[in-house]
Length: 238
Figure: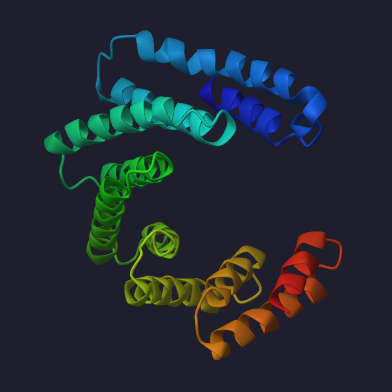
């Protein structure tokens, strides 16, 4: 049932017609009706680990709606904190669980993003650093799990946008680029990997990286001529 609700909420949230001024109120009402499914799930008293996991995921989904679509950052912070609390509880029983550790890192990221939006950059930074710490430990402990590498690359690249220290931001972007390079080399024709690498290269300070981003975007525009986003990205690079 939750998968069907997820699909419904994604379709409503991403519908271009519902994003226009005439349909904004309808869009919010439709999103709110879908949110009630997760809110009812959270009213139930969890009886076992699987229900705790389901509730933590429900909090994360409600965070996404409040943060991205309603801009209700206080509600988003509450849901991120509750999801975080569940993952901490579950990991206290099974501290080596890779999936639980990954979700704990994700909850740190949600808290960091929300606190930053609320203007608390100090606490936001602490959560971003913890997300990186957990994510790096997962890559170290599970070197053959590519999903953990992929997530670490995303965290490093995104956290670079929040730190005030230029040198530290450059180091984080370099870490992200190295991980994106790893996936690009494994599947050089993969559209998503090429897009991701180009974005991180474009944000580097050196001219060589920016030139390489331009070349990758030229290739994407050439190989996917029916997708206007690649021409748009290429125009940004010039």
